Length: 157
Image (cartoon, rainbow, N blue to C red; front, side):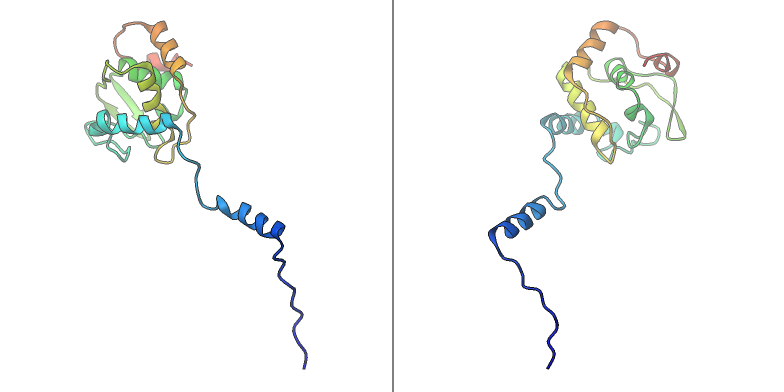
């Protein structure tokens, strides 16, 4: 009687350790950064009423943040929008919105950095983290000004 050629399973400690190392992180994402988690909480308590927890916005109230070029574009534009607001027509994902957006003025630079980090990384967005120093620098440079128009924001890099 012929027997199939079977290979002996290597159960040495080195091969088991290798298997464990390969499988330990399978299918798991690293834990979110603390800025992201703080930003999520601030977003849900301050921004979600208009932009919704899904980030898809609400017709006639606020545009979507999901895959928005305003979210994923130059961080300096997004920081300016949340610091001072935006007014007039703005195109987001092929639709034009003509609303005035204001942001709570009692947010610290760290609060704003956290909210923006969350928005740039949530819902499949792949933007980079925004740090407190970036927000502080733009706040100091722009001072206390009126809201931005799209034309003004497009001049900012």
